[in-house]
Length: 220
Length: 292
Image (cartoon, rainbow over all chains, first blue to last red):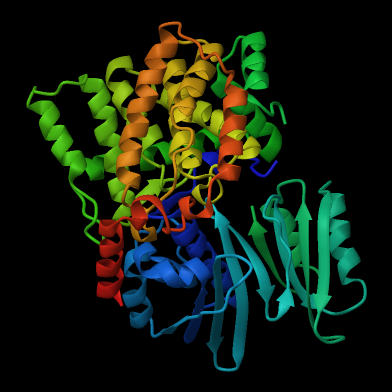
């Protein structure tokens, strides 16, 4: 079952015109912003495939920048996001790529401020549903069919079991889980797909664990 | 999951003597763990968005490209002139479906039902039949849950994406969903709702997705108009006691098969159909030439 909820059919509430090219694009931009944690000084946005060909007409550009400004899919400021970003002092650069990607609706977003940097790749798979396929050159695999969280943590022993213990305590079953890191002992990430909805207080409890940098909801 | 297809959905509703909407609500509670109140509140917010989009479209909007806008206004004026040949409610549904999609094309706020490109049909018909059936707010929210139930079956057994299944999957699905909801709101049985869905979808089979310049404007806005009209007619037919010789689930399966064999040029790539006509190509050049 690809679709689980009545609100996958009646929803999302969004700024038009396209659920994949506008709402999905805004969602990818917003994930980048959430992961970055604050407004960037510069956003470099590379568009591929159908995104590259039709972004102006679909408002994919303003939608992604709107997401980077932390706007939701239904935020009426999305059409004026480019001006609002300029006003906020964010330098925005669009790059139209020719490279053929696995999915026609692909975008790569690089955000930076000072020495702080974030790079992710997102795809918009239809009806406003998105997947993040790469984060800071970590490859991610998220089906988008189940609630999921992303845990950014220090690569230390015991962190993974501490996280799964809390989930088990709240009777949340893990359906799929991935752990990756680039260098031993540095930053690492966990992507956890679960069968139940994760309540705010569970997220707060996870955030309180030692060696956890950030918890992000990827899919609700 | 309480149901996987239309037959199970109808059987559940008829055995329990409840509306289709109620089965969808119960499943939503089971799947998401949210309370009934939370679920109603969320759908109520979606309903408000639909209401505002219809209102905005009826006041007149124009898209960024200038390709669409203003047709809902023309149709409302024509209805008021008293010269209309089709019934007032039918044309009202058509104009409100157009209004919603014109707002969508103009980057306004809409609620996808089931997608943005097909967002006009469900609210268009809902706000038109509202004028004659005088439903309560709760009944209007139930209308959306009934649509969700039928859309859920199509989405999981076939497709609701134009890129995967053509326009039959988007406006076709939306029209079938709307027809079933109209029947239920008018007091029809769950079986009659399923018949309305089947009759509607049968007449949308094979509809291709061929948007000019790849934009959700031409012919999407007018496809929503005809989708609303199709839904209204099929709902009346089902309420009159007419049934579909081919059961609803088999029609949905046929739609899936047709989508699978539809050439890629006719599935949201802007390479075939109306998009590939001389005028379609000229418009594409004008728009993207102008915007670059």
